[in-house]
Length: 71
Image (cartoon, one colour):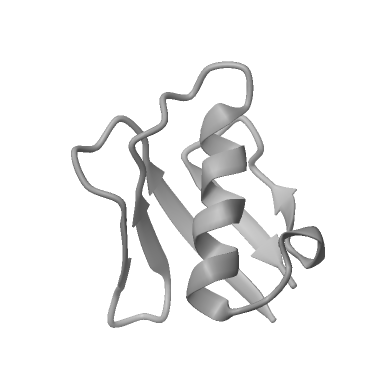
């Protein structure tokens, strides 16, 4: 599966919101320093979709707030 995700780092909550167009907006506590937001994103998505963390990859946008992931 392939998803386009908008990440909102530094949020007070951690949650996943699906938009009407099928894209996801993910709110994370982690700040975007040294890849910690990407790590937190993968951890949260693995819990949400009930898949192993190793099966989720960020294919585009590793240094951007808009990312494409596959699993």
